[in-house]
Length: 138
Image 1: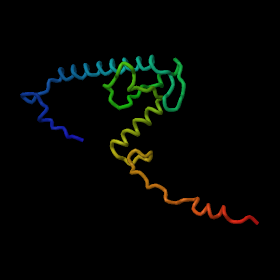
Image 2: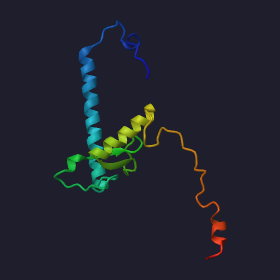
Image 3: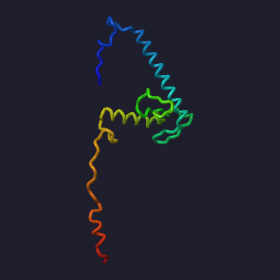
């Protein structure tokens, strides 16, 4: 992870304008909220109210438990056709992000994402079967 050098990021004079910083953060949060609300609403209109992983169905009563997952993990990639989205329940969405973070960090995920492929099997259970079938019947 890159380190942050605060001396390079300070404005001329070395003083940070706190009110300007507050404005920038507030603006970014507003934009993020609008962006997220927009693609969620579009995804709910395009896709069925069913978790794409486990198949759990949702109604208006529990729709708040259905989330929108970005397949490529890029929250700024929001095509109008919804091709980068899938509706997932809270549990499946959490699982997808857990798999992704373990893949990126290389935490030896047990679901095969970060482990090397195993060697193919060499045992042949039918070795000699042909000879056994040729034996005369008693």
